[in-house]
Length: 208
Length: 387
Image (cartoon, rainbow over all chains, first blue to last red; front, side):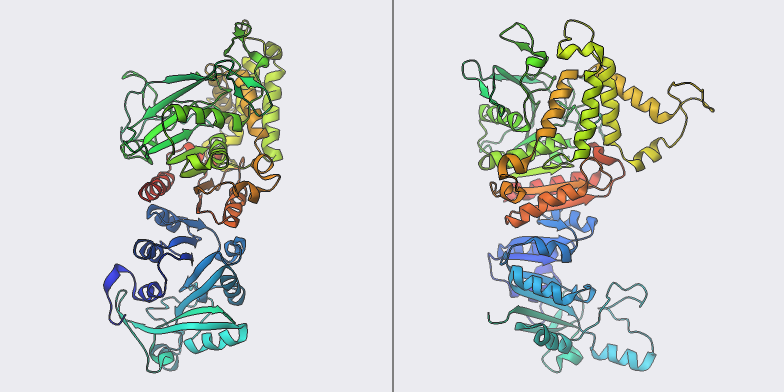
């Protein structure tokens, strides 16, 4: 998926979409206006459900014909029986989650595979800003000031790998990407923790 | 539900419509009711809008609440001053688009708007049933609607939609006849009444039954229990509003005066409003119907009736797609009640969407011109229709 600009969805979402088997059951946590789920429904014939807290975004999802529940992902996820989904996606939301370990365990309880993506806080531009400016870094991926950011956690690609060992889940696939604009980007294989703007992981329970 | 009947702002309408009647369950083939009684013949008043497609896959059943009727949209004549009760939702290009869908709206049994109810003639006596009318349930209402849908030749409804008691009917359809519907849209409703809801209904019923004119339900040849019915309606209106909407709409403002009159007339605007609503209601509604329909809503208990006490088990009987909508200021059926049904649907792996719409107008929000509600209904129906 290098330099891809097809499909009309964001580059990181294109990577996630490429990992989804056609016809599978997909839950999108914090699904926003449902762009990824809509793409998956149209192109991969998935059975989709999204969870989104904001009423106006829920409206956009339903207008697209996406099934969506308005609510808090940490609470809504508890209602599902084990193995309700093939994939549970947490796209660019992990950095906003209060209890990541609980949430990831729930994801792997109700889903066969989890997919997690987040902005990489150890990208070289962030490191350089910290070193040079003395202010908390502001980037395209993390565009907020310290006082208005919803991102209560910062983590790097290396942090997430370490986290997988501590919590006890398995990394099945991973992609480190650098995104130029919304729709275009590239895989980063050379020092990803330094040069990738986003990390994307497919995870499973240990022993899967 | 109140009457928020208003003209569509853009002047769009299904136009002139006609109330129709269908009579069935002629003796001896009477309709078996939940309480073991039989009722027959049964007449349902209904209206239809739009055109049924050749494949008969575009039919939607609209279900009305306590004081509604079959007249959901359009006008009875060119001179008719008022459109149907959900004209803002049902019509060309609207939430329920009559250019695309064939819409059926049926009055409920027990009602007084053309369907068989306590004010109908009992064939045994030749006089109105009064309190000889059997106590009917939401299940019975839905059972009768299904006969109408059979009669119209529709094997599978694209959707059933309703708010409040109409939402109860939508839920009942979904577990009673899941094979006959593709989807259900319960709005501002509950799977069973809370003690609070029963309490309001009970006070309203007591107001009617303590009116001397009520005469144990036998008043059709004398004076109607108008006072009792008006008070019942006033109580209803309190439950349809909210603290916030009353504060905004009325506050403590006085009606047409600057000072208290130091008597018990309608000094406050809210008093005047409630009296007006109560008095207006008695002209069009039968007190016994009010008793029977509120009773049916109190008895409604999806868990007990279909799930042996378990809401999860109740929804295991269905496989239809749901859109559940609640409103933030609805204190009659608060959001937690919608969330409970959504939770049970999730536990059954059902395809469900849920939205809590921020609205200050209380329970009646589902009848108000809220663009978001129209968009949700329109988008959901489109998705279901295209699948």
